[in-house]
Length: 388
Ligand SMILES: [Zn+2]
Ligand SMILES: [Zn+2]
Image (tube, rainbow, N blue to C red; front, top):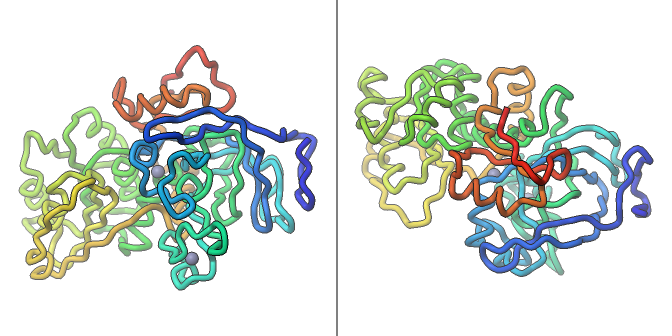
């Protein structure tokens, strides 16, 4: 029975010594293994994982490797468990933890910085200077579960208390897995971008971050909010989440339409979520002079950029690799107040044992999958469950 020294547990939530965990083998290969249930240290809790969403970045990691960084290198064949968009129930408390209680439902954000570098001290723990240094004699304690430490495609995981976001009972497991996605868009628009109500926003690319970027921008009071994409069904969901205008780039010249909708001047912000080859140049032409372009998607190829256009127009271009500055807490506040319905992007649920099928649905967009969730409990292995 699980009873590590100094760790508080409860008979209400019995914890086994070992758990089922998916581990990454060769590129594209996931293997179901038994692993010891991890032990929380100071400022950490043990989370029983109830649901985990699949992200495009998981597919990058599973099939290609980066941005995961395990023991200073590629993540394959290192007994590494990917998955980073999970939620669950706190079932054990590390020494001294009184910020959360056993039985509390939480969702998680990804990055627990080292806490000692310049960026962590500024609150920019996503840009920790000791990223991935959590092993051997270079152990700075950095954790980014699913990237530099074991993640959520398993039954239990250890989380720093700073990565936890408490959620209300009314929020479903599936919805809770989407908090970090909304928090990523929030961080790009507010903490890094400085968006205030009444400013105009274009979101390019109606994937999960793009669609929730629309919802967050609208909830923040942005106006107008414009979404561009190639598929009408995705654009329709964008409308339901608050887009004032949608542009199908297969039919219309998005730059021209955006400028026309904004008095010929363009918008204050573009949140670029498509990763398309010419996306940066188009974004730069969609913003007004002094406008800001937030890059939230990473293309595989190096991309030529029209620097002269950026220089001549005082345009800001910045990247985000994920959430930060506790933006997930503010995103959760919007979601628990029902300012938008994030579950509109959840399309499929599979049991944890069927992770490879779930990955295939996400990767090949089977049945138009957007967000695919796997659950360790409460889903029968025989049936996938369509979204509510
Ligand atoms: Zn993600
Ligand atoms: Zn740091």
